Amino acid sequence: MTFYFIAGEPSSFFTMVNIAYVIKKINPNHVVVAIVPYHGFLAKMEVQEFFDEFDRVWHLPPCEFQRNIFLGFFRGRAFKKAMKNIVFDENSIAFAFTSMEMSVNLLIKHINEKYKSIKVVLLNFTSKKFDCAAVGGRFSKLLTFLNRLYSFMLDCYHMKSYVDANGQFMYRENCQQLPFPKLVLSDNLLDCNAELEQQGTRQISLPYPSIIRHSAHIKKQERFVVFFGEGTLANFYVQLDKQFLIKKTAQYVNAIRNYYAGKNIKVYYKPHPADGEKLMAGCASAGFAIFNERINAEMLFSKYHDDIVAAYTVCSHSVLFGSKYGIPSYWAYEICFTDEELKNFFRKITSDNKSNLLKSLISLDQIGSIDDNKTRTDMNKIVSTWKNGIQILTGEAYVL
Image (cartoon, rainbow, N blue to C red; front, side, top):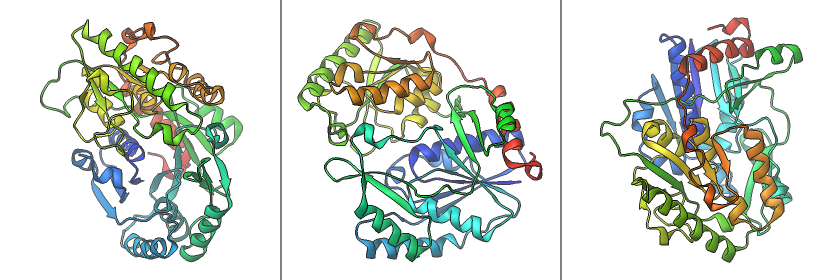
């Protein structure tokens, strides 16, 4: 049987890599195919080893919603032309994330309309809707109107857009419920199949496939800690007190440095893909070495799980993936933020995570407090749960 994995954004792509790995563990004869629309961040990363895990990879040109509608339309037409060159097998399954990207939008609509025997399954990291208002977002009539023009000209699903207080794009979502079953990647290994059957819904939860690649790197690393920075954080969350953030971030990173220096453990600074090697304001004084390998957080956790002692950030969602991989993960929004509404947004994420591997720091003396909780993935349980879950989600015609 053939499984297609549609993703270009790095977090979505690497999750698809891991799901493909699980599918191959279930049955090595299954064919796994990646469909990768161009994404600027992924294009800059060292990911060939992960492309090699697929039986075939289709690369597609850039395609995104743009204020310059003429350029967007031109790229959309070129994308659709390239997309139609992909040869899909009948009676197969296509995974795609619930996405705000036009490329994914066009692909799943194309598959749904042309290949009636292919089951499209939409993935998400949470069953809850993103609350834009909680982080200062508001509905944009202008960008939503542009989305409607794109949907008319390119025949994609209509989407609505949200912007921040400065009018900069923040988020995009579908206007209508899409006609596909949903798969939520949960933060634990609870099998929700029985709940799915009782409710008669088209949604199921399965464990996030946190695959540890023991042989992915040849040279053994010394044990290390990683700090995930966000150079544009103050631009994204308009509620932030910038000077307070810089002051508290400096105190935070220096406390991390001092704690692990006493244990002779090196701390690396991992920049956000959009930042290059630019440091987050307040971090320079700690003197962290830059983690130079061009991979994202999930790839880092998968490749270097055995070497990572802990992961830290102010509020990057990278630490959520760290906790999924069994790595002690800390964030410091309680220390570095002043706005209560913004704190509540992150408190809810922490609470929903329900993990003893994700720590919201209240004071700096809590640094290192959950380092002993580190765990390893139960691969057999992940494979077993995924096998049962996909059978229920896709129906008897798609039993693995």
